[in-house]
Length: 289
Length: 152
Image (spheres, rainbow over the protein chains, first blue to last red):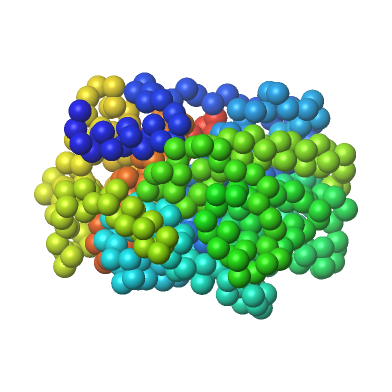
């Protein structure tokens, strides 16, 4: 076995999965989606500040895969709905450029090791990322208003006729700040959507609230959020963990902040999916149109 | 102190990679693509070495599909229109990768992206390409259709 293949294999083992050389099994279509009369929900992933567009696509894909794997055991009301997945992108290229520059200058990272360790412990504890994250947290005016409006508009279009979809938002990291702000923007502008048509399930949140009485999960082993909480005491407390996951020893996931990690390690994975199910049950009881 | 130790851990764990790749930091964004298949020759070799054998043939193709989309993104990072086209190509390639290896795709992605963006100029071009499409809404394929995104 080549060294490179061994390294990828090792990383896969650290992810807690077996090496499966054969092609992945085809994911079946949701049965409710074949029923034109079934209610539709739009499930949005909103990426965090360490997440480029490509990673956002993969994070959204991971959310979809894990959700679909649990869907057959979820409440009948949730199984009866057709769930469609979307991204609300939080543009991060400028921030990642800052991290790249700082990582090279302050930590001596090469370009290759930077990309391997973007969500590792080195960058998470260096203060490089926390500094960027704390700027918008400490001053709401510094959150990109154009992005907030774009996200709120996307939610509004989903809820409005003729699509008439309920909306569940699953933001990660800085995406929580945008989701809270876009939720407020949505409800603050006419026409106001029917009450309860949007729910948020936050992951790794640096915020002090989840709008709409939403649920959240932040791990006690999330070094980045723990560091922010030391400075901003009102940050929501940790309420999950990654158990004894070997991910925490992997250079790629050791920061304990990766969305992929949250949806791979237990009990965080199951708790996030349960929070989604609980929120979807609530959404099923309202009619957006 | 803790930060320093953890940084050291990060560097030591990935030190092998920095020496095995040893890119010339002044190398052009395009690099060398002697066979003109849209993927740098060093990345071609890496993919063939890492994903060798019949059992990995589908993965070899999926990773190369992503590598080709990234290379195009780097070369056309100054163009908004082409950046949008290539970002869409990257999404399709990633959906193919998720279809091929639903349990491992992220580790594979982290690894190949680190190989592709092995110099500061390539990393910057990648982020510039992202910046060109920061407000774009690229449609996603649902999971049951990801396999259709794979190029033969």
